[in-house]
Structures are given as C-alpha cells and as structure tokens.
Length: 343
Image (cartoon, rainbow, N blue to C red):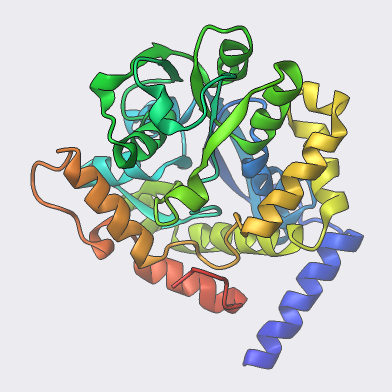
C-alpha cells in the first residue's frame, strides 16, 4: 500500500512539473476560497502556485479565490453566511477565538503555521522598547498586525497603552511607514525589503517566526457541517496544499513565475526582492510540508488569547478547534515527510 501511494505521488509530481491533461471542468468539485489581500503577499503563494501548476485540478478541484481586505475581513466574510465561501485562510488567533464562541467552523489545515512577519520601524528606532509613545499601523484590533505587535510589545515591557495605533489597510502599511505616517508596521518579508529601498534606514526589530516561534500564524477553516458533508473534497484540498508546498521548496523558478503573475506590480520592478524573500522562507522553513497543525503552537496561541482575556468560557482544546481526523486522513493519503516543528 505504501509503495502504491508513493508511486501515485510520484505521478502527481511529474504531472505538476511537466503538465497533464486536466479533468473535464464539469468533473471538478468547485471550491470558493476566501483569502486576505489582493495582490497576495508572497507567503500565500502556495495557493496560487497550486492554481498555476494544476495541482488542485490534479486532485479533482476547481478552486476560485475571493479576496478581502485583510485577515479580519476574511474571517468576517467566512462566518457571515452570505459570502458564499466554502473555506477561508484566516489569522489563527481569530479563528480559535471564533470557534470557542461557537461560530460553527473548524480548522482543518495550515500551509504556514510559523508567523511570517517582521516588525519594521522608522529610522532612529533601535529596538522594540523604542516604540514607547510611537504610532503603529494596524488593520484593526485583534487582527494579524495588532496581535503580532502585542506579541513583540509584551516581552519588552510595553502594552497597548504605551503606543498609539493608526488604522492602515494592509496595502497601506508600507506607504504609511515610508511616508512617515506611522513609526512601525507589522509587514511581510518582501514588504520590509521594499520599505528599506524606499526609505533608507528602515529596519526590522523582530522577525516573528524567531521572536515568537510557537505563535500560530494562519489556518484554513470551514463550516463544520461542510467538513462533514464534503469530507473527501476538503481532504483533497489539504493534500493539494501539501503537494504545493513540497513542490515549491524545490522549485524556485516556479515560485518566481507565480510571484511575477500574482504579486504586487512593484515587485516586478525589484525582482531581487522576490528572490531574497524565497530564500528567507526556505531557510526558515516557513511553509508547512505536512498538515501544519503542531499542538505546541496551538497551546501557545491559546494561552496568548487567554492572557488577553479573550476566552469567556474556558480555553478550547486542540480537538475542539481542529478536525483532527480529516487532518490525519490527508496526511496519510500523501504520506508524512517529517517536517521540522510539525509535531
């Protein structure tokens, strides 16, 4: 059985790399996926790499992406019942909090559980303690950038009351820092590199995946009823994401091709930024090669939410948050590869 599975996976890889005849469109299961931010940040590219290379189609899926203005907006759309989303990629702390409140959703996979973000600061700010009295740009309270900022402020003796916040939609964070409207922003690696080109002296005072290695970054979640009624569809989606991540680690040229197609136009003017970002991601092992749901990360993030007073009915368990049977089934189908930190 194991040799057969490996043989089938080898066929899948060959099909992805060299092309294949896709299944007829009417034979594909349709999925509407909610994703934050258009154009997408580079850490999200495994989704688009899977689209570009036919990995979803190889698994019998027709995935269409709906974009929203950040993680908070994507989460709200996912639970609204009117967005038409089958699943969504959202910040893990928000997903965990919502599930604890009974939003009817569950987590089933993560393509990137390490917190891919850096706290970039204006020239003259030497470290995180230097943010006292400064202005930080965030998309909203409780969102990706706000919780990330808190994760850095706390260990440095600062709280929300020691800084000022200004609302900045995700596409505006780099301009706010470059144009001196904010003293600090939590942004993606490629955005830090861009900000440094546009405003010499900008530095990063914290890489969150090093600073908070057990902070859970993002997760795919879906309605629990849908996870039950279309179980094989969601399992195949998780398999496709693992195939995409495993392939992208070995295919820098393919990553860069997808980046040139999907990422913000400014990066095409600075192709070195995309190359540097890929190298940083590979070095840090940002993308998960298994199901991306380590218990240690969920425990740390659960405790983080609890310390902030977010849970009113007790801390949810790992099993309450995650459809563990589906996650295990997807990993069994593709075969585990012993990814670092994924245990």
